[in-house]
Length: 158
Image (tube, rainbow, N blue to C red; front, side, top):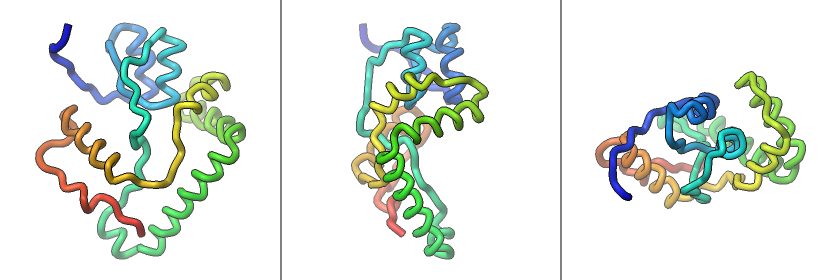
């Protein structure tokens, strides 16, 4: 069976598990480690996995880039350095992530959940124009963005 209506409702990641378990939502479009929690704790199944997608963006205003260009360079360099550290120190990074998730969500994440989720995450500080275009198109298709969006000016390396 194909077709039908879908409502896309922005929902904080920590709330998705409970909503899914209670039947408040039938599907979730989310990122790791929330995907792994849905699989393990709510018997969810992945029916679409997009391996090449941007989940975290460094964004600023044009004014900031013009007036604080050196600071923007430092932020971009720090992001690249952190990304390299995470890649080189996966076990320690996972422990830090577990502690941060617990502080933010007040719930525990088992180390094996994070380890499983980690395998699906690609850490990079490189920006792909194709992925930016795809993200904008996805936002349009789900109703989060409307009209023409010129992505040619969305990427700038400070």
